[in-house]
Amino acid sequence: MNVIQGVAELRDALRGQDRIAFVPTMGSLHAGHLALMHKARAHGAPVVASIFVNPLQFGANEDFDRYPRTLQDDIAALRAQNVVDILFAPTVPEMYPEPQGFRVQPPDGLGNILEGEVRPGFFGGVATVVLKLLSCVQPRVAVFGKKDYQQWLVVRAMCRQFALPTEIVACETTREPDGLAMSSRNRYLDAGERAEAPRLYRELAALRERIHAGARDFPSLEAQAANALAAAGWQPEYVAIRRQADLARPGDEDAPLVALAAARLGTTRLIDNVEI
Ligand code: PAF
Image (tube, rainbow, N blue to C red; front, side, top):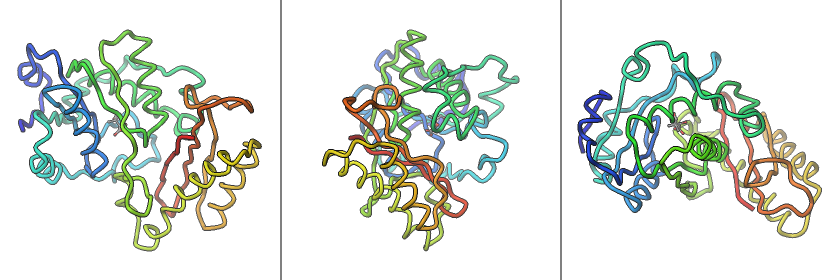
């Protein structure tokens, strides 16, 4: 695996390749990321991964400074897996050599509900860096995790609307044996919080069961799940049952659906979702 920091060097290394498969990440890699990379390997070659903690997608009061940065461990893990050919790990000045005045503005609706409402500016920052990474790597395929469901939909819509030649492929969420979705932010949890954390998935899975059993009062189902989290000491930000295609509120007959949640456990913000 070749580790590259510079955009010009990356372009040189990729010149002439037309089947590149790409996995963008912010590092602090776990088995969920590795699953994305294995999926990329099945879709193209060479496989390029990026590690870049993107300042544009963090709000002023968010965890940009404390976001885990474990580049040497990440490189060792990738070398052990032997699944990535080129790791692009630019510095902030390499990605943003001048203030990033041109930005992608995600649309109202998908861009400013749920995560976009709680984290204003988040999807603008994500879409801008993803567009820029796609421009640097020029992949045929890019792989995104369904763990960040709304991010996947935003990126897919951006590529469609800008007619980018990259196919966006989604990868199922990788979970710990107790159900907790793998996330770099799980590192923030202390032992007690880690034991409590799978409740988020359990509540979403319970919602799925109730809907499969015929329940259709979505606001009340959402409130029940949020209350259960709050009763267990969480601070829920949202629990939402939405249409898979566009995350709009469903009517009684709409399907397929997805239940999404974001909640704080102590100082850690966790998100998860289940398709229904
Ligand atoms: O999901 C992530 O890790 C990031 O949001 C991404 C897609 C790498 C953009 O910075």
